[in-house]
Length: 111
Length: 115
Image 1 (tube, rainbow over the protein chains, first blue to last red):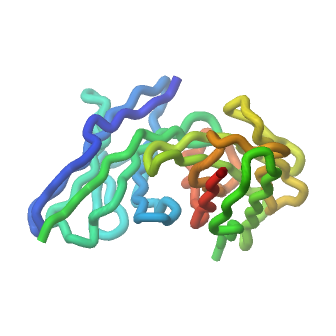
Image 2: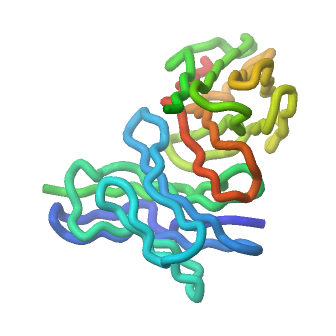
């Protein structure tokens, strides 16, 4: 069965520093991987996805993610964090017609 | 462009009362449609998905049901709510197809509190 794991419940980073939110996956076949962000009391917003090709995927709001097949990871990164990046981040994997989500990582960026 | 509308945004219902949450998508045809539930602000649980009118797949056995009476309309219902049904319900859509890496797009969600 397809699954993703987000090992950190919370990540704290200072504004201007680089950030990484971790995700590992377990799939049979080709992995289709996604990152979403959720602000309080809002729906999820799509950030980026990996389908095939370049292992470094660029997405919205300056975020990028690195696909690593040998480590079965798909970590979300940003070179310089903003306070406005503080939110709940979800990694997801395609399973049939739907997406299976991780439990989420709360990112807190301090000024 | 495509848009998704979900309502009501918030509702408080007594235990044992019925429920109806509605979702419509505009600007696309024959979308895949989804209902997810998010409890305690954390992980998302897939409840139902639909690949066409009248075609509903249930992922979790419970007292909820879903219907798709029109191509771009998806309804989540219950005949008798339980306290455990409280949560944040999210409707979503994607382009048709399976295993194609289609992005799923979410509505703004509906907060349900069962008292």
